[in-house]
Image (cartoon, rainbow, N blue to C red; front, side, top):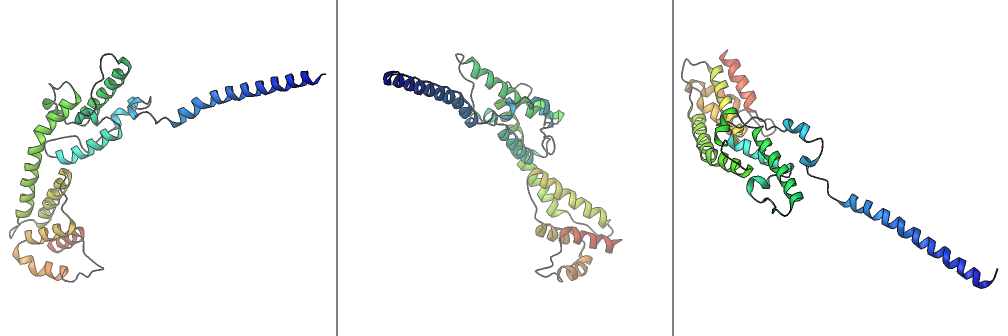
Length: 239
């Protein structure tokens, strides 16, 4: 075989190797691009719609829990990448973008369903005429925002001003005070344990002063009595 033929064979082999590497790279590049793509939002995943009913706040929206419900619902909508449908930052695409519009419409319906699924029946009257998810959210906000703050103020005053008198059932009184505290927590206002102990003590008849002072005065920095422990001691003494 001549040297010229050898050169031609070597050149042909190099060209074939180069083409093979090009094909390999062309096959690999899309896979790398796919791996770098962000995952689709939850509502675009096939498993999501079947589990849609499981996305629940601690309690459905009622006339007393707007602040807590709003916080939980906002987080739920953000996790599902649809909060923008409520605050107006995600707007429908133009009519010349049918694929993008279909994706927007799906997310819009998911937003509505998440809201629908977390309302008490009596709350539907506030959104019955709403067309978009943003209108639904705006309607609920306008109804509950001011009312929710007023309800918190009223119940907070009730907690601070409720007093037991001589002859009252002290165990029932303690339960009532706890229910006020729990409701305020549900509404979004936290009454810390130290303040709640003071409220409990001040709510008792004056004849309890010496008893409660003896327990509260015995506390140290390393052994602070909780409100639950104080209630248990008071109820034991009463019974």
